[in-house]
Amino acid sequence: MMCPASCPYLLRASLCLQYDVVPGLGLQAFFKTLAALALLVLTAQSFGMAISASAPSLKAAQIMAPISTVILMLFGGFYVGVDSLWDGWVFLEAISFMQYCYVQLFDI
Image 1 (cartoon, helix red, strand yellow):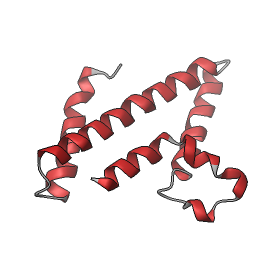
Image 2 (cartoon, one colour):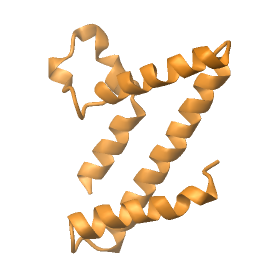
Image 3 (cartoon, helix red, strand yellow):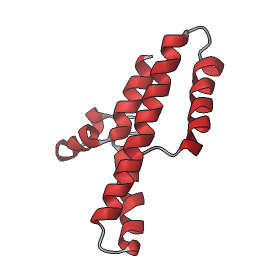
Image 4 (cartoon, helix red, strand yellow):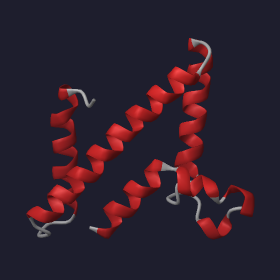
C-alpha cells in the first residue's frame, strides 16, 4: 500500500512533468501521468517487498535489491536498446517494470 506521505510528492512530480515540461496537454494527460507514476511506485514497493521476503537475511536482501533494480533499470529500454542486447538477455526488458512506465510516459 502506498504511503499517504508520498502522495503529495507524487502529485508534485506529475504536475512538474505535465505543466512545466509539456504545457498545454490538458487534464487527461495529467491523470495519465499521475496513474503511470502511481503504478510505478506501487510496483517498485512490491518488488522491494518480494526481494526482502525471499532473501534469507537482511544482508542478503540489501545486496540483492540494488543489484536487481539496477539490472532491470539498465535493460528496461531507456538506457540500453533491445536491438543491442544479446539474444539471451531480451527477456530482461519484458520483466522490467520500469520499461512499462517509460513507454506510458512517452506515449502521453
